[in-house]
Length: 273
Image (cartoon, rainbow, N blue to C red; front, side, top):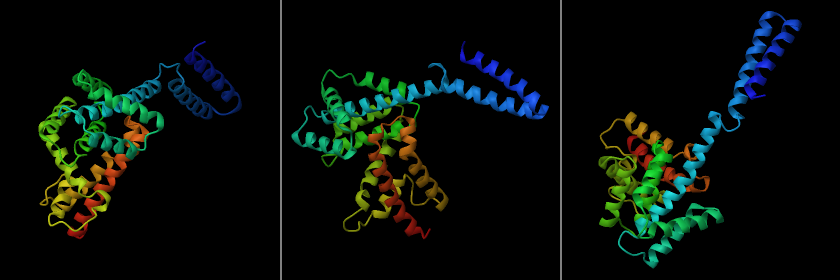
């Protein structure tokens, strides 16, 4: 007997008993409750055919694909100038440690990084794979670029070769050239507020704060608030995990929200909000 047949029989039995023990209205209400419960049961336990199982499989595929793509492309970024220096290896290891990966994921990450650095690595195939499983989630596409920006800037600056490769990747996963450059400007500005923006006050700190939020200084209070809230939502760890980001990779998103918060506090105080 399949699940839906069982639900139908249960529903008939419940209606019959309810009519004997209660009023017609009570019977209808009980029947509706049982029917809805049965439908939910069918969705959640439908032998792999229900929508819930499909959602779970999609999320699992997205997690695996995001993880593989991030570290393989990080390897490609590091190798973009033709070789990987000892400094780049050390900085990459620091980044992996900073993420707080599990020991198992750490070993997998190193393997993916090395694969991406291999000259035979097919970057276009990897981008297509990412598009299939993660492309419908703008937040995951944005976080992928943040990971790659961090790799490129690890040695202090983004070289022309790295910039060209980052642009190619961004276009390959659905960003326009304008969106790519905007995202890079925002990332660079947000980096100035890492760790609370420690150090001596910068003359252009307020301008950097607006750039970090992705707005011009001339926008209204309402617009700047909207930009801040939108960014905080995009980098929210729970939302990213729900879309398919591995749980042990969300630390970077959490750090990014703190950088955005620091920039916002400077703007807020300057505007007297």
